[in-house]
Image (cartoon, rainbow over all chains, first blue to last red; front, side):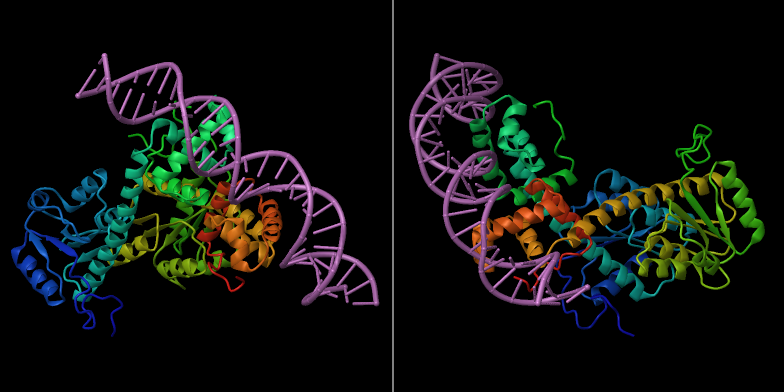
Length: 227
Length: 227
DNA sequence: TGCGACTCTAAACTTTGGTTTAGGATTTCT
DNA sequence: AGAAATCCTAAACCAAAGTTTAGAGTCGCA
């Protein structure tokens, strides 16, 4: 039977060399055996006995997938999942547990877990889930990069330029903007020109796309008092 | 204990009068008791003994939530969920089962189920899930309405106008479009003007938003051969 | 106090967008 | 064959966008 992902496939030489699989489980035997399995398919896992051990370690700088036991000595895996979400970290999580129940699995999946496996499980199922998790994190990281770039350029804008940006993206004419802000059309044109250069847009549609990205992060206070 | 949703709350007189809760379960006793519960909180449920009974019935025209047993005589609830998704119907589903396991619940949640409850369950948990499902379907229906309107207007466009639409939304100048299509700028202006009227946009940003909605439905063939 | 950033303005100019009017050529359907 | 839709074009015109140059007023901060 063919597997549909790259992990565990002989054809994939080292497509995951720049990825990070974190295993957190208090059972050392399981941890080590999982470590061997992962190394066998070409990924270099980081093994931890507890969540705190992981939290204290260096944060990974490559696409990451967590393999997490639900029942852990300090915090439970589900609690940790909630904490991560509250902190804005959306790391993909594959839960693995020996003593799970349906409400647990449902809660985990509702909170965005990639997979919820019960021991014993088929190795390929875990590898597939990890592969999916890494793929998701890869996409998230790419989006984050783009977004942080846009956000940085937005920070370069003056208060006035931000207002102009919003109005232009709404489709208002220079004349209308000038009237609404109580300034002349020439001034609007100057601000607009400077804004477009700073934000890095060469056309209005391009500006719209940038604004859409910013809005996803709620960075624009919609209608600020600056108007 | 206070409930966080409208269902089962005394304050909600009839906020769900225009909604449809479909119960599919082969256990008549359970079906009827669930029906009484739902009527008690102000919703008028439709009860079915099998999936085929529901499929043969009139499709609901108001926000809908399915309450589905996983194990059913003909098709399993999970199979039905997959069939619905394949058919493009994204009805919210609340699974209810007496004989579930973790893989089942994980599969259901992965496929977008609202909730997966095991009998016996707390009534309020079910009501909360139904309420969440109805809310999701309400949002989906609103989006669908907007989208079908946009799609209908897009269908009014001629082939040429659709090309112009795409280029304008990309930020191309009339001069560039004319050059790329091998026609004069005047012609582009005429097509563009007609296109804007037909699609119902009064500004380029407005056009961009419309195009974004269309792209979500993959209606625009990106780079068509008409260029 | 003085520098720098921000905001605003005027005037003159070029480019682009948008509309109208008045056609010609082609295809499609009845 | 005739009507309708589509696609194309020209000329002329007005509105809007964008640029440049040059300068004035305000504010905060070193």
